[in-house]
Amino acid sequence: MLLHHFLEFTARRLPDKPAILCEGTAHTYGEIDAAAGRLAGLLAHHGVRRGDRVAIFMDNSAQTVVAIYGVLKAGAVFMPINPLTKADKLAYMLNDARAACLITEPSLCGVWKEALAQAATVHTCLTEFQTAPQASPVCRDEPIDQDLAAIIYTSGSTGDPKGVMLTHLNMVSAVNSVGGYLGYREDDVVLCVLPLAFDYGLYQVLMGFKVGASVVLERGFAFPVRILEVMARERVTVLPGVPTIFTLLMNLGSLSRYDLGALRMITNTAAALSEEHIRRLRNLFPQATLFSMYGLTECKRVTYLPPEQLDVRPTSVGRGMPNEEVWLVDESGRRLPNGATGELVIRGSHVMRGYWEKPAETAVRLRPGPNPGERVLYSGDLFRTDAEGWLYFVARKDDIIKSRGEKVSPREVENVLYSLDGVLEAAVVGVPDAVLGQAIKAFVVLAPGHAYSEKDVIRHCLSRLESFMAPKHVAFVDAIPKTNTGKIRKLSLA
Image (cartoon, rainbow, N blue to C red; front, side, top):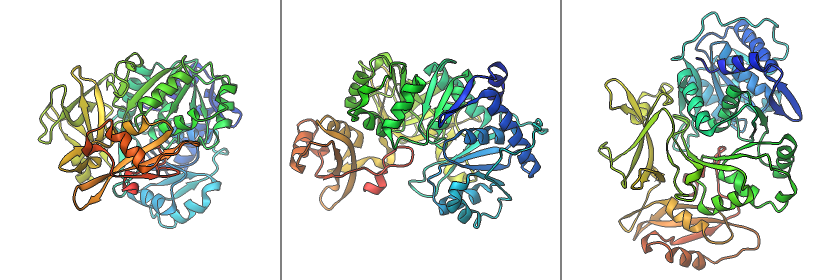
């Protein structure tokens, strides 16, 4: 089973079913599959061969989906790149992966032209491929499931971006496991406002195409009212989001004007939802089941919390998903019992092959597993388990704050900040302090009509936390810096 086979099987079964709904136009499975086949022929005509890397630098659109599957049908490796990427970073990724081809769009020419001037290996740039040859030849050198399907670059918050190598087996396994526990259906209409360069957005298409669902593609969530109109018109049943999106939704006074009764499922990842966010979301959409999840680019998804557990353990991200094993280890690599705190380790067919041509960085994350010859993924994230083995995110190992000789989890302090009425967003970092080593600083975004002093916030935290965990400094800001995928840029704050 190769990744693009899901599209081909569904196109044969449901050729006239809308696969992509974008900007008011429906594109059927038959149309998407045929267009991807024509693109594969065009790529072959331009000398793209099995295993070549093809960068896709496009905004969310039906053409982007065609590009992904066209590259796969050609036996090549697709590299989705966020359209907000700047020229220098784009050039870095093209050179790092030694890309053979760039598929892009004219509207982004101010960026890709500058990047191409620095990219020696790119021999073909395609901006229009509707006129590709009609023939749809099968790739003569068909890949196997051990071949790479994609290279997805990490955000690079701690240095140059790293290319996560994902095989067909990796990605098919992730589609089967995640789509299985979420229960995507043929009659689903999935809203995707997340970039297809972000694995969370990309997998909405991959999972939807496996079962024959319709995916509503939008370029973002900058205009929430327009998105709500689309959701109501298309009878959206699945809403994948991140905390930033849900915060915007929850603070729209006009939300009740839209008929969102078809919505049956909400999913969240990238960053954990606070208890207050969970409560408000469930009140707004009582008919929808809510999945809290945790994942990372290196293996797509790791855990999910079954919706029936939300009332029992609302801050948990659940347990490992199907066809996977997870456990916690201490700093020496020893497995830890339930009730402990340690680094999360992941074992499964969805774990990446490694970082593209970065053996040292790969060796840090992929280490020997319990069986001879296998490697497992060390996440770099700290979790704790309760007595029953449910997982709770603590912090990135690099984000732990050491104050007064104690270790402080930013997440624990942020949860308390969110319990203060009117707090829309909160982030906590450690800043240098001559006496404490690191002092805790909180950044807070308040809803309109709410006002607090620094002392008010500190007093609130002291009433709920040990004294060493309470912030020493509080900054009230209009916005908290985030990556394109909704994760808070802690380094920028620090």
